[in-house]
Image 1 (cartoon, rainbow, N blue to C red):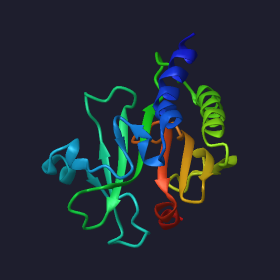
Image 2: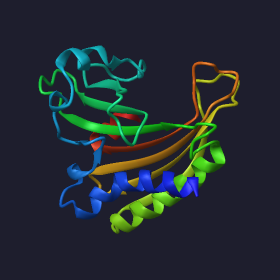
Image 3: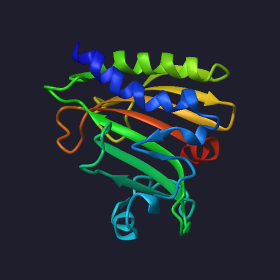
Image 4: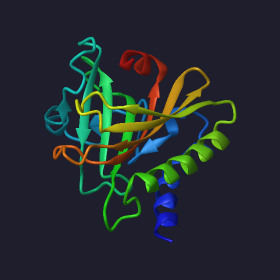
Length: 195
């Protein structure tokens, strides 16, 4: 029963797509591609939320931001990317993160895989012309022990956007990492930059 409720909560985050005429109408915590972060956070909060996760990628292209808020309803954390130098902080990619919890609906990686597949089915129905790729499990290079992995399912949406559903299974010895599900929507241009 608990799995059903989590699935319902996560699936509701995709519900706006059914009514959407445009991919930008997809929202995570009421934020979507093309929205200005200034409509949701102060400039000070935005500046303080900047993170540098991609040391190996070309700089001066995109800015990574990580937000947590007591006002978030569906996700524990939201990651957002904007173009470097964009004074309006318009969103080009957004992701919602839910951490596994011993008393929560996603307690372990197997629960995550179940939810991941259910969400993938919903995306396939919502975007009938999308192309699904995965699931693929990859050893995470941030863990030199080779004991951490993530499993991705990608959707190419009209060759303009990409949706990703990922389950992260971190090595228990890494105290600064936490297992989680990650749901993202991003422009193809941004996705290419990540690769």
